[in-house]
Length: 335
Image (tube, rainbow, N blue to C red; front, side):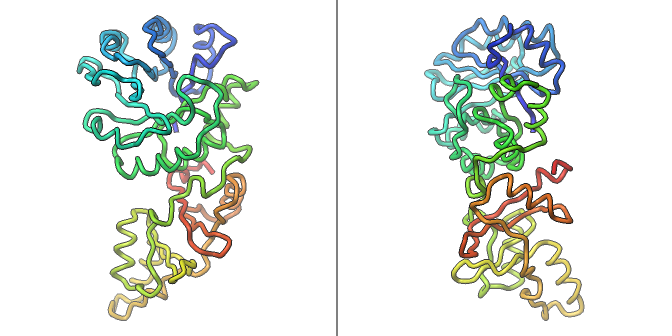
């Protein structure tokens, strides 16, 4: 996941000094908040002259047209407009060559993206109050991100607000493309260490698994009494996660069938596929996690496994399946 450093969150240094500081780090983007103030483009010009780090510009204004010429002139690599403040229709000229996005606050529906989906490449989720630094991440945004990714799989997700090491881990696992960090980076004693935490490490827990898991309604599930090859294949194909849960009538988890279990079952009955019993394919003792464990407990569970964990069923205290977690975005050696 890319980290975009919110430059105006550094209250202790001038912009030019902060640029130099960021040049010495491995930050991916410089995030610039523009609260209807065209003078920020003077800072953007300084950033362009003194750094090769891409500019991630977030504009909050009712009248976007007064920014179009400035966008064409300075060409920030990313530009985002806050939709709740717009009083004019967004018509960004084609002469602007950067990537375009819209930003929404927690209370705004993701459906607003529909009118922009053909031309805009990403959505910025404002998980705290726009323009305010140091707020806490609103956990309802986890589900909004899941819903957005499902509805707009080609669009990237950016997140701003309350991104610390723990939130960063969750967002990376969810496949978020970029997150903005301000107070967490600049209030740390060492910006390089803080950046490393955002990219790789986890140190504390404020969220539990059920805050960010994929719900049972959005997970591939086959009922035990409907277990046949056709249903298993359909659920794995529809879910696009490489597995399906198997539950009984009370949603008690009976096991999982993954791609490897399916291949093994087919190989064992190649001579007579009519004799395949899907019950034989079920891994009846999968690794599971409780919905109420913390992020740190989840990490410890994953790290203690002898093999990389691709997915986990999530259960409640009654051993009923309530959701799933997948780790496709972390398998590249992050854990």
